[in-house]
Image (cartoon, rainbow, N blue to C red; front, side, top):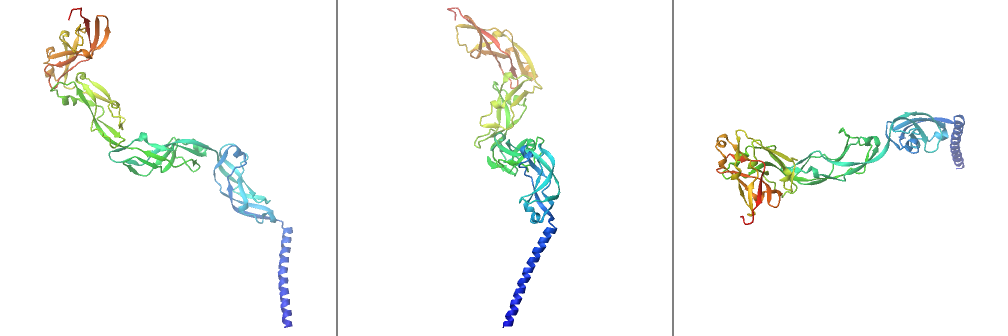
Amino acid sequence: MNSNKIKKGLFDNNFALAIFSIIIAVAVWFTVSISQFPSKQITVDHIVLSTDLAGTIAEANGLSVINCDVEEVKVELLGKRTQVGNITSDNLVAYLDADNVTTSGTKKLSIKVKSSTGSTYEVKSIRPSTATVLLDKIETREFPVIPYLQNITYAEGMSLNYDEITCVPNKVKITGPSATLDTIDTCNAVLSKQRTLDQTLSIQNDELQLYTVDDALVDQSSLEFSSTSFNITIPVIRQKTVPLKVGISGTPNGFDQEKLLSRLKLSADSVVLASDNIQDEIPDELELGKIPLSDIDLNYTGTFQLSKVLPDELTNVSELENVIVSFDGSGLIKKNISIDPSKVEISNITDNSYTYSLVTQSLDVSVIGPEEIVNEITADDIKAEISFISASSVSANSTTEQYSANVNYTLNSAPSDAWLYSSGKVILQRVKNDEGTT
């Protein structure tokens, strides 16, 4: 028993001594290494290159890094073992030397490395040692937003009221490099998905697109927006293609209006009309106005304005305003006939204490129609009448007043396809009768 205890004790003492010897050996080796080889060169890779220009002259000039062709660097460091032994990519910072940069543009800048823990060392190499960098000023500008409908169609009988399309908000603030902002000409809130509308729609845009003045898309990768979501309202209206026509006034009984109307040619045969209210009726045809028969000469032309006859509740989608009406007088002739002023009847006299008479002594009227009919008509076939109540005063004194008036000419036996044309006014006068004269 005593022999075994002695052996076990010796064994335990020897094991402890061995452990102690190893520790002493390592300490001696470390001490020798430090004293004999105090410096060490290491290689560290995957060090992220920082593009932060804080504290540099470039930053003081309002410049920022827009693009850089280097993301990571690899370095070789030489230093005391106690300084470089624990260095990794996590406690090294690679940065750009921008202390001498004062202007924007593409620059080739040196890359430097520093320790984030305060370790000291000598940088033997940095790979790559330079970076090509795009520098510019970051600005914020405001642009109007324009709704842009790429694939919007409308149902049959409907139309879009493009003038009333709205976008809310209608402006956007864009932050980015000034050089990029300079290229922006238009900012479009785009509806790119296919949609067919049969009623007014309010919807968010699908995307925001920026275009140059040459209609090229602007790269948005370096830009920030105050908003990219815009509410677009698209009014949908009912529409209809409506034929245009004119009428004729002052035709005698038995006159063939349809035959004459067929000779009137319109510069536009129809117009597209629309209504915001689906309950409003859009007419089947629209009359531009009536042409007095006595105004139609062989070379007649007249201009009619749609805005004067279009109801307020309807919209002229065609944007057609003026319609020119011309007369086709082919196959017809015109003959001038002089009328005896004494045979002109003055009607609708308002005061019998005056004597009424014509001052104008030359009265001419034209007959227009087929040659075989016109040649048979004489002055005896024509009645001339002036309605005094439609006359306009032109001068007056104590006894005499003069008036301007139109003469109404009619054919005593009106043919169905011939008519009278006259132009200009005549002067008539009335003179106060002496007392006792009636």
